[in-house]
Length: 196
Image 1 (cartoon, rainbow, N blue to C red):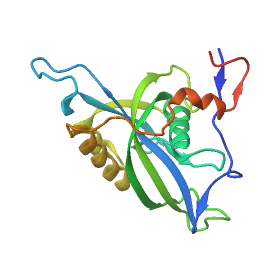
Image 2: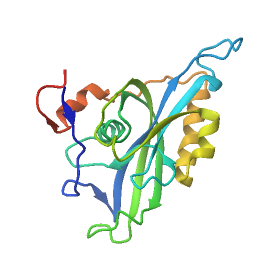
Image 3: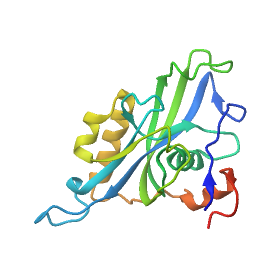
Image 4: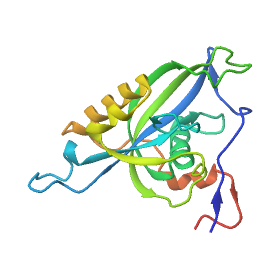
């Protein structure tokens, strides 16, 4: 079995006008329909995956630095794999949010300003072992309960956008031009053997 390794450091980090560029996603899946509810794709049937921060303070969604050797979509998929141990297909781009990070201050971004690009991610696979499994816990929540669990205001807003997208009957549920997670093997460093 091959061990995936999370990227670290800021040497390939993207910045734009004083903002550190971040990519992330809201992983979701369709669970079992409640008895008599009809559609398997109803809002009551949707679950989202949340993770703890590395310090264990509250719940959030996978996100992290968008690096110079990847697209924003590839960065979002990589972060989902590294932080939450899930693979899938990106759906709708939910939007862009600006926030200030106390932890991410540095030479290129001394005030810790960040711009996050967030996507909905339809989860196809949940791994038993993933790069940050010893630093983070993960938990699935019904969509309706997730807002109350989220500790970050801008992520609550992103979750509301995701909820609206998933609830819309005409949603395409595919993000054109987006790679799926298996292509990440070209971007993630790993130790020993192949990913197969």
